[in-house]
Amino acid sequence: MKSNYFERNPIQFELNEEMLDCDSYVVIPAYKEFEINKTLESLKNAFAADFNIGILIVLNHRLTDSLEVKSISKKCNAHIKVFKELHPNILIQELFIEFEDEKKSGVGIARKLGMDLAAHQLVQKAKYENLIFCLDADSTVSLNYFKSVLEAFNKQANKSAASIFFEHPLKGTDYSHEVYEAIALYELHLRYFIQAQRSIGIPHAYHTIGSAMVVRAHAYIKEGGMNKRKAGEDFYFLHKFISKNVLFEIHDACVYPSPRRSDRVPFGTGKAVGNILFEQKLMSYNLQSFMDLQFLFENLNSLYKGEKLKLSEALMHWIHDTDFYLKINEIKNNTSNFESFRKRFWQYFNGFMLMKCLHFLRDHYYPNEDIILLSSNFLQTRKRHSIELLKKYRDLQSIKY
Image 1 (cartoon, helix red, strand yellow):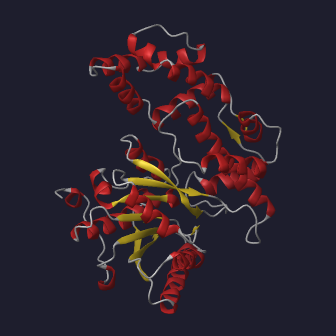
Image 2 (image 1 turned 30 degrees about the vertical axis):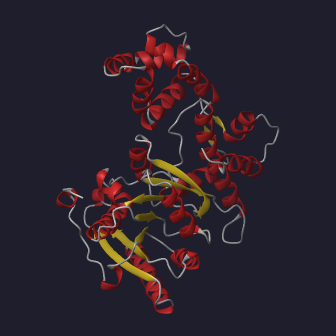
């Protein structure tokens, strides 16, 4: 396998000798992390004797962080060392970095450092098809996590990456009732958003959760590796594979991300939970935006033929504010049949374009609405309880897409 990826992205760490022959690696960024023992214990319980998998923990903080934050890093490192002493059969290596430039820090770079190291070693050993698992330091996994993921990739030889089913905890004693209610609303928003896309025929409607994704080593390198974003790195990373139709979903295993409030990233789960606790509600994309788009997507053949579509005023406004028709003509000029046109259209109207369109419609025509109302109306149910609604969406999305 020829690639200059590592010339452009030099490896910054060396693997310990016992980590060199692993068949796969789990990469876990850890910043201001208190709960890593639960994560490691969960991974230990999911291991089997024939799983030769190493765990790479990227302990990181910024040079400018407070002494308290740096102390948290030290405590996290101490917990890892104790765990390693208690479980010497589990292969774990800490990768410690103190970011000198605050602008060049964060979860994206932390993931990248670990994933680059894992990919480099697997390629060195000619284990091109082997896997790099992504997890967070406050997430746990189901007992069949490794077994199911490995089996799924063996069956999906033509796929390069996967999104694993996830469920946030909805009850327990670790957090307050309010936190569990908040995370139920947030996950409901995530699932409503994906289900609404699927209902109107969008082929790239997949969850992109950083703690619930897996990629083959060679594909990681081929697609340019992980990005350096401070948040949303998972969305940008997985859409590389979604756009090429080489991502699939794994429903047999499950990842359980933490529901806790956090300020570690500018947006995402932890930030959303904090906002919900403050505002006591969550707003999401108006159903009418999806309905407007549905008519366009159902008439792609007419668009290909050059027929005039009777689109909504809102969608026409967005189209005239973009280079939509210019792009459509370009696609038509470079395709010889409708199927080729359709494929190229969805490469153009990808997840990023969808977000731009939805934000335009939200800001100019269809304001966001309460997620409880939206998700219940979408399912055409009278249920108004967040957890009841969420369980219905989970059931819908536990089926192969």
